[in-house]
Amino acid sequence: MPALIAAPMDKEIVDVCKRHINMNDIEGIHLYYKELMDTQFPRTPDWSWIFHKVYLHACLKGRKELATWCQMGIFPLLDPIQQAALRQIFAYGKYLLQRAKAS
Image (cartoon, rainbow, N blue to C red; front, side, top):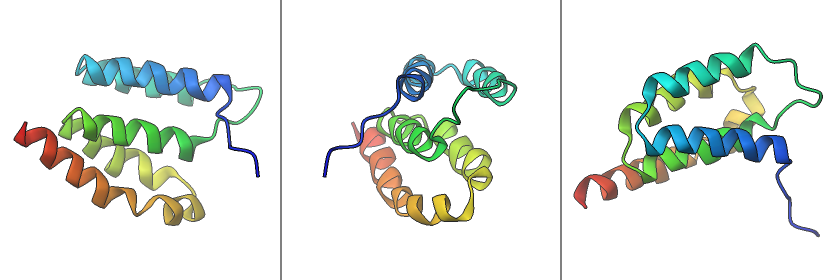
């Protein structure tokens, strides 16, 4: 079975979010998210993949406020099947946040 490759548009969305996270630009990522929600895409982005990458990056960088915003503000907007598939990343995210805090 071939490996799944992210669509260029999905990867670009993740890259922009990661830049905001790296700069701890909370307002910037909120504005970018609002812009994304107002955009008509030619193909629906893989929101569950994007959430997964952005949430874990926020945790890895120790950005607790952004990770919480993803978990409480974005996660509930995903459909129930996507939520069930992603639920296990929260334990790993908590571990990453604690590890980032300790270093």
